[in-house]
Amino acid sequence: MTDMQGKAIPRLFLCVTMPISTLVQNNPLSEHIDIPGLLLQYIEGVPLTDIATCAPPDRWQSICEEAIRIINLVGDRGILNKDVKTRNFVVQCCAENQFRVFMIDFALCDFREEFTDEVDWETCKATQDEEGAVGYVMQKKLQGGFMYHRSALYRKLDEKYKMDG
Image 1 (cartoon, one colour):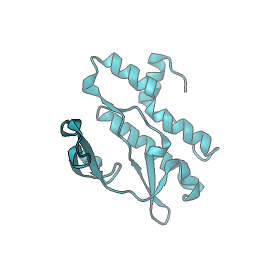
Image 2 (tube, rainbow, N blue to C red; image 1 turned 180 degrees about the horizontal axis):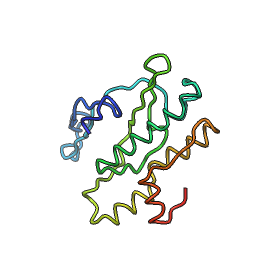
Image 3 (cartoon, helix red, strand yellow; image 1 turned 90 degrees about the vertical axis):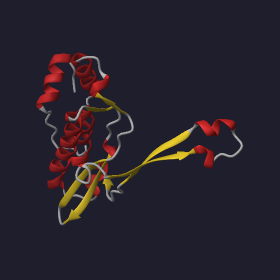
């Protein structure tokens, strides 16, 4: 996802591992435990759920569509985000009526290669409904300021696995 860094997701600056032994003294278990971490770009902005406070109504549709586009870009790379929420997107105001959307939370993800076959993968994608987790929520929250239109992929998954939105 390096091509998305700084554009749709934060830049990854550094992967770190902090030995817990530097934090916890005199504990025999501490020498066997390390804490992994990531140093990411800070994105100044508001959560997607709060766009009504900073963006004019005529921009809500394009902002929400951009969040959904990012979800699908991530999914196209074989990543299933099991915790897609509107609060996991930051909307940044760049200039007069110019907004950038970033997906910021990837803590609970599965990867395509972990699934034994296409049916398992599609079943999880259909059940998780990452796109709908943003689309339906924002459509309801913005009360007519955003109309959610399901992508062809999710319409196909709905039909194949008999899911209802």
